[in-house]
Image 1 (cartoon, one colour):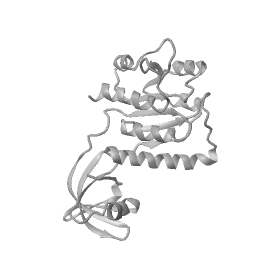
Image 2 (cartoon, rainbow, N blue to C red):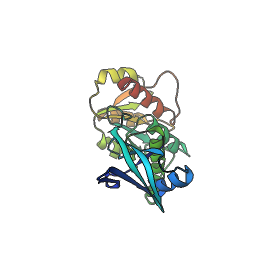
Image 3 (cartoon, rainbow, N blue to C red):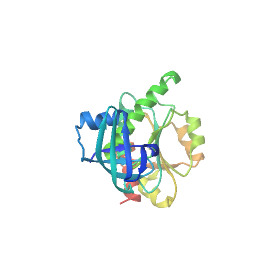
Image 4 (tube, rainbow, N blue to C red):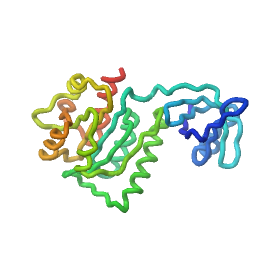
Length: 246
């Protein structure tokens, strides 16, 4: 069943129940791309984890309306807020990381620049990049049935990253004193936010690793094999969701 995201002001309470109004690209997608008709059913999520099963009944230029048949809480969100800090990666790797990470349960993605990042984003180009990444995030959220649209934040410097850390923070590092992510998750006794920090293609410098530890981050390993920077986030998120959800 197709899922669309709406805001609270798109829900109208009438004598005959709740009516959802969908506009813009989503309305065009329903009527033109999907060629849906009256009495067909969609899902609408209000980005506050409320999920509505709706029956389409009215199609007009740039707008589609639907009656709410059922309302319930979305059950597709992880039990805690999972934040991914991802170092900037080359080419289209960032787009792949954002898409797959959201499918795997990331609630927020924070790009950052580190010492070994090859990619540098000018401030004048950053807005366009974030807009592009946010559209990918929305598409992934729809496809995977999320109860929210995870946000892609602005790019942080490494210093800004250190100041923003909170909750349980894990950073993936190949250093000698790492524990496995499985051990770290069991030992942390997680009850609040979880953040996972992934480096760029070149990983973290020793100085960066020490600064992360000094600021409370837990160094973890992701197994005996070396993972690419676009593979590591989904692997780590899968481990977190396995430990907390399954």
